[in-house]
Image 1 (cartoon, one colour):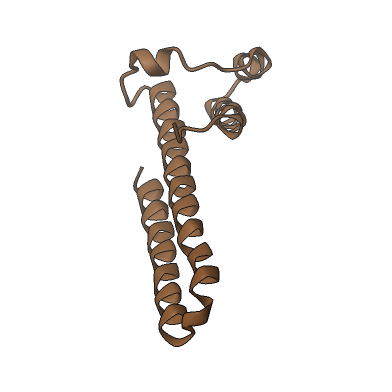
Image 2 (tube, helix red, strand yellow):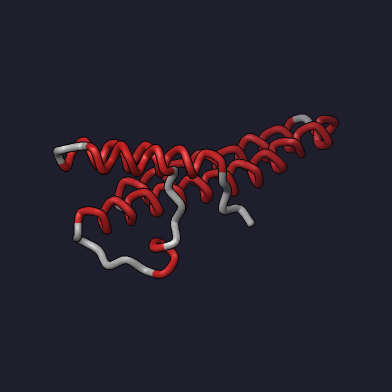
Length: 118
């Protein structure tokens, strides 16, 4: 999870720096204030997207840890849907690293279609 929070913090800092660009524009080019406000809208969209990515990463890491036995499952993770084809691939794999690869791919596939923004 450390990599997930580090990535979120890096994204957050990058998004915050866009605010400095906005300040620079409205200070030096006040006639462009209306156009510069697009930067503020972009900041909101980017931080929400970054938070969504962070949650996706946490879900992925958590489920992989549960699968490996280093974390206890919850009702939410127990009901996490995985496609049947992915389950067949995981089940037919003979070694743990391959099973983890298939599981990670299944989670990424599921998360790519869903958002946690709501």
